Image (tube, rainbow, N blue to C red; front, side, top):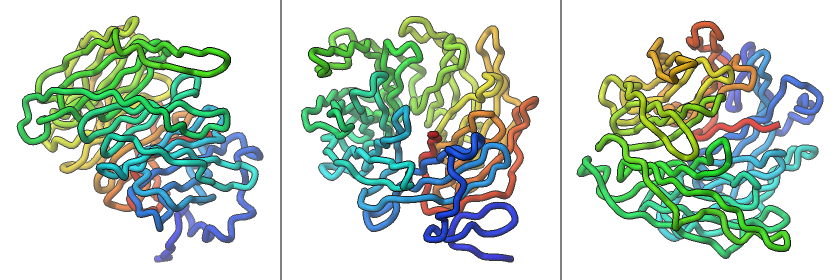
Length: 383
């Protein structure tokens, strides 16, 4: 057996990061994408790493990384891939949002600035449709922090904190709000905020107020409304079908996926179906294949793996068609733009597993092209 401390590809070890000046770039190969990896890490470790990923053969190669951020567990790139925004998922006053520059020519990450979120354990971060604001979902205490950006993409200090109240059925995990995900609807008209602690999705109309090129507001808080789901569900992550008519919510505690019809900010539940059938209460992430035919949902704590569903294209309902075991504690996962590969961040296996997708059945096959990296949590592609 050949052992390697860096990431591996089929057939041998990838050279160490210091020897990768000959790496084929995304610009040179149309099949190549940059893969960004967020993780749990100390400031002394590379908490965010960048890899090349070839969507034709599933091979990957370490490119760069950045130290100096505590627990950059979740991140989002700008549309052009030149900036990355990451949480610093600490509790209390040390929790942060962070702006990072990605110099693609130099393959270098540089921290632009950091700002406190004023909400504990930020676990999700996103950009507004205009990319004039960054928002974090703060798990502890249940709040959203809205950061305006300056012309260089740095986070301004004039933030807006939106806090929630309430509880729900589970007396251990739902004693207070726990914001877990914030997503803009595909029409860019609403923000959906999944609240694990109160079994609600908070919905905010979006109104980006711009005067003399300066954005002053984003969310219309006075018109917020809530969508209630089954008590004890624990809403976590949500995704939309490519046709924008359906949305799907994975619930961490109940382990169920809720299928919704979507229209003008309104989500109407049309189905509840189990992704976790063993009562692990650790469901995580959810994504749809680019062709819109299959939905995938990760489950942790017991029977760690990915539940696979086919999607009825007319009705939006789901049929469970398979289950793929993974490494330990699968968190977020991602599907390549051509739909050929699904990659899973297995936090407690210290690895990213690369699975090949069958486009006809949606089933997954482990390629063995595992990327070894410490405590990976979030995976994002950029170009």
